[in-house]
Length: 164
Image (cartoon, one colour):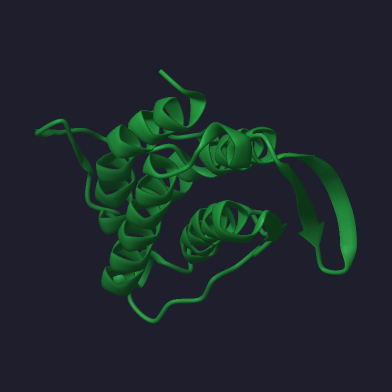
């Protein structure tokens, strides 16, 4: 199995889990922050969407112009955007050849070059960063705290209700 296909398989599995976790956040809970320095639930979701769109840009153009926040109006809109974005990444990975996968790419934050590496390395780095923000069934501590304290509905993963 090629590494694009391996990442494609992981994203295919995680896509539904992300959708379930994000859709569990109630509209009235979006602004909650357990600490003044913490991101709100809305900001965490905006960041997740941004990482997905970073991956699309990386696979299409060989460069990431990092998106720290991708605003949305309603949680329902965020769920659709995140799901469609991850679907686009999965589709692109399915048609990615090894030569392109290993070709040079750049990770930019504003006008600053943060890293230059093969697309493969930047894709895995971006996905790893994304999953530390909040990973579906294995939610990171910040997301779990936000979820519990923001009156979120428990997400459904693998057909069972779970608590955040």
